[in-house]
Length: 230
Image (cartoon, rainbow, N blue to C red):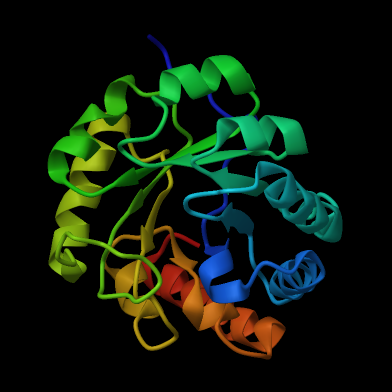
């Protein structure tokens, strides 16, 4: 089956993940964080709330985030295709045990953005037949933002999985990195082959979200230039 993905290529350079475990669940605060992140250079946002007990409350938060960024960057929803549809979000990010990307594509349509977590080489090998718009490899480094039973893949592991992902789908598929990424290692992961970094605590874990975003974006952009791809 040929890939049918988002009309506009996905820009993964600075992918901010608004995880309620880190950011809290106040809709107004989440909206402010989202707006500040975009002002500082975030190119993509994701709302992540594991084990949602109150879908209505989650929709209030998602809609507040979506309104705050006002179309400046896409907003994706972690796992929940139904919430993405209800909120009018631009797409979803799926894990390996979530809804199959082909089913999500049928529900969301050809213009939606669908991302997929890649943890292993075999996951990357499957990309040739999946209707996804980007892959995000992780966890690369140790993190406290998510309970991850798998050991970090590290820079070498990331590079190997990214190589197999591009072999499966070509160089046009953006590949990001997630878990434990901060200003101290963002450049190294880009040098290892990432098109961008997904960040939670290093961006939203304290005040000065805009300044943190600007610093991370500058480091990513410089590393991409050094790699000759920007």
